[in-house]
Amino acid sequence: MTDIFISYAHEDQERVGPIIKELEKRGWIVFWDRKIPPGETWESFIGKALEESRCVLAVWSRYSVNSDWVKEEADEAKQKGVLVPLFLDAVDAPRGFRRIQAADISGWKNNSSYPPFQSLLTAIESKISSASPHVVKLAPALMSAERHTVVPAATPIATPYYKKNNPSEWLFQNIQRQHAVWAVVILAAVVVALYYVISHKTENPVAPQVAPDNSLKAVTNVAAEPAPLNFVPIRGGMFTMGSRSNELNHQSDEAPQHQVRLSAFYMSRYEVTVGEFRKFIEASGYKTDAEKGDGSYFWNGNSVEKRARINWHHGVSGRVRPKSEENHPVVHVSWNDAVEYCKWLSLTTGKNYRLPTEAEWEYACRAGNSKPFNTGDNLTTSQANYDGNYPYNNNQKGENRQNTVPVNSFAPNAWGLYNMHGNVWELCSDWYGSYGSGTVTNPAGPAKGSCRVLRGGSWYFSAEYCRSASRYNSPPSYRFNNVGFRPVFVP
Image (cartoon, rainbow, N blue to C red):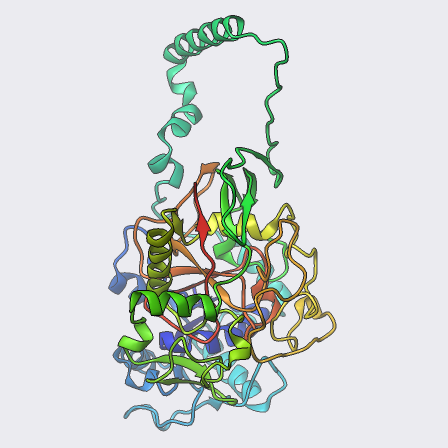
């Protein structure tokens, strides 16, 4: 059973995220990430989660007050007597909800001592207790331990990724079912291999290089073609993708850890800059989603706001970028815009450019390091651009620049890539979805979905989101003031 069901508008996802973190720290099980599992429909999945929740937190904002989904979920919760309204903005709740305001935390920012936030916690505890009279209130640590001992109801198991995309590996894992046939096949293969070795023997044979399991060392197939300007050759190899369950701030969508084998590729040393994107626009005449639509989100100094005129010309605060920021990463661009940029680059150069897969991005970010960051167990604001008010693991606070920085800022990682942590979230080619298990080769993510993957954290987020394994997602047309991209080149 879920303790708290969060009903909110997608536009508020970044503001709701820190609140969810605070609730989870207190041991509550929170339903908020609406990824539909295989075999489920949207209506049945959301309806079941809503029905099983002991408390429903309706997040009212300038966006959600017009959301039919939020209104419908809040109404159902009100009828069950488990509704707790939460105001992010100074707005009027829809009719029928105006007399049950619980808290207004528009001034709250990761500060659990903020009085309205405490009143919110009290309201939630009251609803959960009344919904489940036999549940004893436990300390967060005990609730967390209890949560891991519950045996879940049996659910259909989705077909593992490798069964659908790597049949030979699946057959090998089921070899015990076909002993006789495989014995003949293996024997024949050995005979052929021995014949080949004997007939092609050289005076100076080279021993093959093999990456051991769990290795992050890149060992194979370095591309022979010279790298384009400002692109770094990334040797192919095997690494462990995802985070351990005991990694601080580990999230469920970073599991299971699994082995990934990648071919060689080149990755841009830097995020695409305003100046580079300007050349694309001027040469192609392309109109971005923000220019064709209703603009983009920016930070007005107090809250997030969307304005129709905001597009790639503008910076994080909604003002036109000065010449001094031509070397900053372009923002207010969507996944669709990034893909069009890569297509244009491919067309004009005759080479194959695209967005990195999520696996390629994490592999390149880690650069051989299995720690939370490619800098080790901690990340400071002298190493990356994030909100220094919220450091990792209660380390010393740092600078909050409230802006992007030039793409060549700070020291690069061990493979020569700059700002893989922080500055802007970087778009990947994959649809966002759950990880499979087993060893996979050059995974490209789910075949379909509703959101694309973002990686790396940003100037606006806390250090925990900069972790190498941290994942985020947004629709392909989404644009914001802390999202950018860097392409890869594949020979």
